[in-house]
Image 1 (cartoon, rainbow, N blue to C red):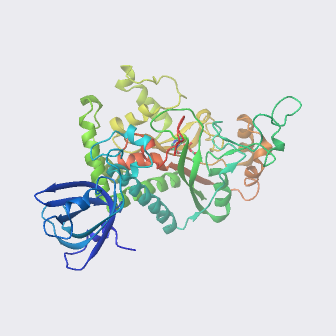
Image 2: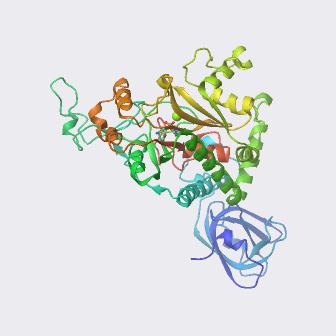
Image 3: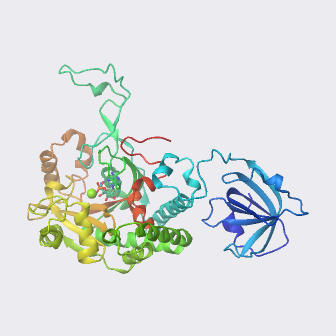
Amino acid sequence: MQPSIAQILKMSPSSDPVVVNGWVRTKRTSKNVAFIAVNDGSTILNIQAVADLEGGAITEAMLTDVTTGAAVRITGNLVPSQGSGQAVELKAQKIEVLGAADPEKYPLQPKKHSLEFLREIAHLRFRTNTFGAMFRIRHAMAFAIHKFFNDRGFFYVHTPIITGSDCEGAGAMFRVTTLDPKNPPLNEDGSVDFSKDFFGKSTNLTVSGQLEGELAAMSLGRIYTFGPTFRAENSNTSRHAAEFWMIEPEVAFADLTDNMDLAEEFLKYLVRYALDNCKDDLEFFDKRLAEEEKTKKQEERSEMGLLQKLHFMLENKFERVTYTEAFEILKNSTPNKKKKFQYPVDTWGIDLQSEHERYLVEKHFKKPTILTDYPKEIKAFYMRLNDDGKTVRAMDVLAPGIGEIIGGSQREERYDMLKKKIEEFKIPEESMWWYLETRKYGTAVHSGFGLGFDRFLMFVTGMGNIRDTAPFPRTTGSAEF
Ligand code: 4AD
Ligand code: MG
């Protein structure tokens, strides 16, 4: 394999031949010299190839097909750069066009395209600076996640994608079936007879690997899952996807405080890793966000730049408050009194919206914030009930600019309490026998959480829409590519 442009740009000038493979970003000709900027995806930086068109082996006619988007192989040697922004540039001796890109038709012109337009050409948007940077960072974060857990003795568990249970109880699931939709087998009462389906029961794509993750943690001790999850919630927001990746650690013998400590250490580790390893790409996103902010109205502008936001997460001890305390703060807040919130904060027990979460983080505490002990009615069945009988040992981690990025809890480890909760939530007990049994045989305190990977990437890159964090996003009405 020939070296990548990222590797070549670190080399010193020399007369040794170097081969550059990549796609043309721009070509400019002036006074018999052609300047070709080439990118191969290994870095946001282009290498500049300079071709002397007078008397050399390269003529202008040979460069007809060297247009934006064409795949090229350029052979030459590295010389100190005259002004390409890099230390070195390539003095070209031979240029081959491996694959032309008709300039009349190639959709990516060397100009700024809207993110909406780029979503329609997701097969090509990898070639833009924005998406190159996004997917390099996405990779780096996935790698750092495995490293974080591996270094701390956690085991990576693959939980199933097809399940028969609804972990979050929201009922927003995609059915998995091989039954004929036009002529399914029916029960006597006219309902579909799923006992005749492929798995002999009704099954769905998983919304979370947690329940199975708990089973593994109650034996391996510390585990994490990292895989795709699916939610058929028809919420067309910038923060919800129908398919997203989630990281779910689960730790035996850990309580909610341990869980909060782990979540805080985890997020800080990832942000530190990004700052240390994705410098060029983050600086690009920092500038990009600053440009975008300029187009907004004064009052809608974010007070912090991207790099500032990342340092904000790194350098602040996360604030930890209960739902009840947060509710009081929000109820008495100026925007609530002035009716500036879209959802008024009036009665204890309401679910908090992202506008409330952002107010707490950005305006009130000015720190990343963890809210705990939510009303049991608005949280999932598996969370441990507090002695007040009204709240559960839940935690949501809130980040600036986004709101909730982590949801987690201490789990209900008491058999009778869990059984009662399952009844209260009208979950068929026979579908949960295996989960209940872990509370019968050697039960113990345990806790875990889920970090939405795509939502976390919105935070790290400052991108405003989850559709721009996944290579091929799946959202309501959209499954092209
Ligand atoms: O808060 P959630 O629903 O928690 C769980 O699924 C638990 N089983 C996690 C656990 O305790 N092991 O989801 C966790 C996170 C959210 O905080 C959010 O970041 C992300 O997953 N998330 C979504 N991301 C994108 N699109 C959606 N539709 C999402 N729903 C949740
Ligand atoms: Mg949640």
